[in-house]
Length: 407
Image (cartoon, rainbow, N blue to C red):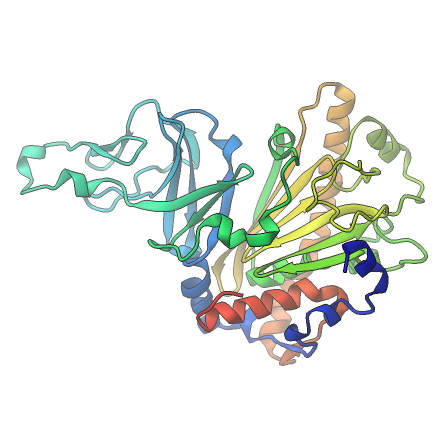
């Protein structure tokens, strides 16, 4: 069945994936400390995690540091003198000090521990031992930085905390990771806007908020009430769903009949933004608007476990949810745009940035309250409808990992 035909004939998207079931979902995965520890051990320390983009470390010696509480470590990601991107535990081999304290920077020579002066080259080799003659039988070759598996996909940097990953990144992304060739991820990363915040909510509570969009006419009635919804489709129902092993995709319609505001119309005329939809071109790669539906505006891609990537014709954005505990999460949002060549184009981007900020604030307004009520255990389960397929799929995949096998 072709994607276009599928979108015309399907009655319920869940009908395509009967293995997921349609029953209620228990709330314990959102509030249980024991469940969180299992997620930490059997998911986050075993799978590939998106930690950034190559544009953050464009030159030899450039580095970023990611402190990953859920994995119990700090990771140093650096571009070597040979141009190769490597990742290491951010730990000096002498007494275990955190080697690099800054979140990012450029290493002109060696990474030097500020405790006792041990120094490492960007390829992880131990290059200098202060007062070396006072040590006993050192094996310098074994005292380099401890490597972490790292790979890239279309410029996104992924790491895997497992010393022996059971699958390489391309295998992990599977069929979903294919079909993006030609999408200008790098060109659109010329301008980046980013926000981050800590919320007193389980990471899945936050992720769930961005895996369905039928809440938009209600929660976002002040900002984008009819960007994706119109009279025939009052809840902005998706025009396409597809699941790919651990990962999933949703395609959203655009309401091209709506009348934009004066400021929005200027933004639409001079540029693009994630909430200012424009008719897409017919030259998109097959994984973008896979149904080739003329109503399409943007795709939401759920990369298991904790990353959502929304891809439009001329922009994309990511949400990444880093668990700090069973009821606390670091939420990172990053928006990517092409280089603005005129002030008008920059205005368009700034307008989109402000709208997205306000939309995210509206999303965030519900999350801590949701966590509080889940923790009350007044209800034992939550119920999901057909448009919440990606939420149900996440729980299905997570359970498969916790039982010892992939989704």
